Image: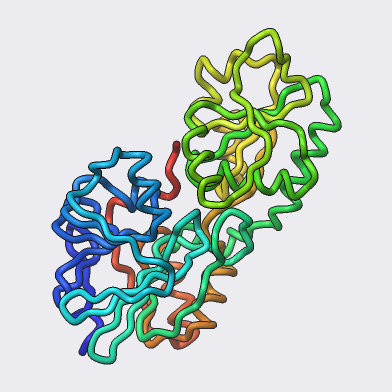
Length: 335
């Protein structure tokens, strides 16, 4: 069996003809396997959805209980059969419930990573490498310039800023699914025990994370009532809220933004970010190349991001590679 006979791109997404299903399709399809709950990978309107229990809960929270005609939960490591094709989900280390889709048929193993990272994250299961004939990798940060610093160091910068400017509120922009909860958990690990104030858009997902066993500590709604002046406090909200009327109500805030893109200073300046925090839920260049070297698959397929640089790296290391140029996947979701 050739790899393209088992999985190949269509306008809807990666398609498995033998099992008649798509992986992370960008349009409604009869049968879908979803790697994680971000809206560029998990869309409503499919006939049947297979995903981890946490991802199904996230989709229900975001789209409503009727986001698909039918749903099937698969725990990490569980094997599901679709017309003779074996599908299993293993941790991707991206966000809560995120998974790599491992597809096996007639002696061929292909792994669709979805989005992933290799460094420790207290809010989700760590990435598990799976030996395979073809590894299908993202390349969001697939350029050598992207080498993310340790998370603890970035959180340390935030805490030092609070100590330096105790009279100011620190507003942290963080994506509602995954990044916000990770920043909160990292702050707790760094010793921040006081309440963290959150935008209303984060509250339901915060509760969902806690329902899945991720402790976030004391949280409070970020309102501007007279009871709290927010001096020396931390407020977390979706990036889009920091510059709208909600964000402008806080007195003299230090604007921070947690994202892998904050290593690009021009992006920080464009957003008016005073304290860029380079905290990413995606693999950086070293993690991408180290993963490909560790797995040593027969082929490397690259789905979205900076495909050309990673494909060139693979060529120089004797690893056959190709860019699939799938459309519909964003670099990171805004809210």
